[in-house]
Image (spheres, rainbow, N blue to C red):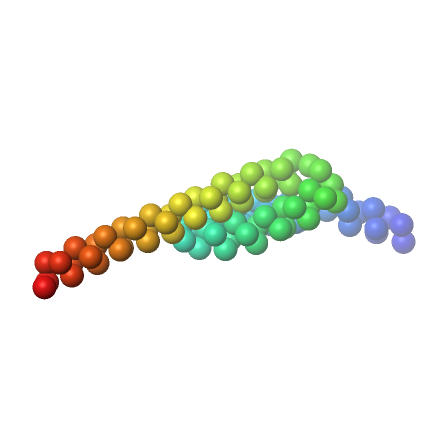
Length: 92
C-alpha cells in the first residue's frame, strides 16, 4: 500500500501535461491565455509534489505562453480597432 502512494508522487504526468499545454499556449495565439492558465496549474501541482525538470519546464513554458497570449490579444485589440476606425472613416 505504501509503495503505491510513493509511486503516485513520483509520477511526472502533471509536469508533462504542463509542458504540452505550455507548447500549445506558445503556438496557439489567443487561446494561449487559456492553455497557459490550465498548463500552469498542472505544472504547479507537479512542482509542489516533486520538484523536477518536468515541473520547472512546464512552469516556464506556460508562463511564456500566457504572456505571449496576452500580448497577442492586446495587439489584436488595437489592430482591429484601428482598422475598423479607418474603414468607418473612409466609408462615411
